[in-house]
Amino acid sequence: MEQTAAHDVTSVKKAVNVTANTQLIKEAKALGLNLSSIFEKAISQEVRAAQEKKWREQNQEGIASYNQRIATHGVFGMEHRSF
Image (cartoon, rainbow, N blue to C red; front, side):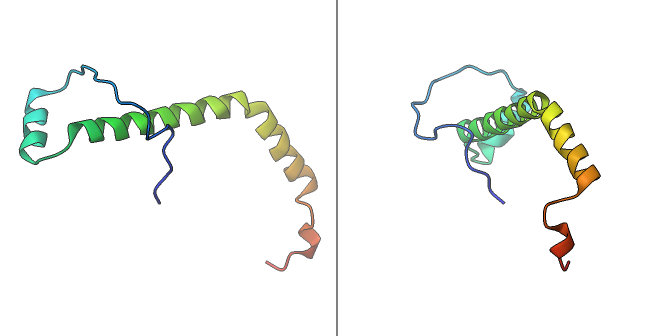
């Protein structure tokens, strides 16, 4: 399942300098891999993961409260479910 981008994919690109393993870079280039695209995908995944972690931390209390309520009272309409 492909996720939507965590950023504006039409945004202007900015050149950056990164440090990476020389042999790995040589192999990637020999295979014709697009390093910029790989870097952008990796950064996008890390940003999304960090945002999700931050959201979970910020909403931890509310989630715990909701889960406790469901554990105590069940879900609305539970008595009418046939599964």
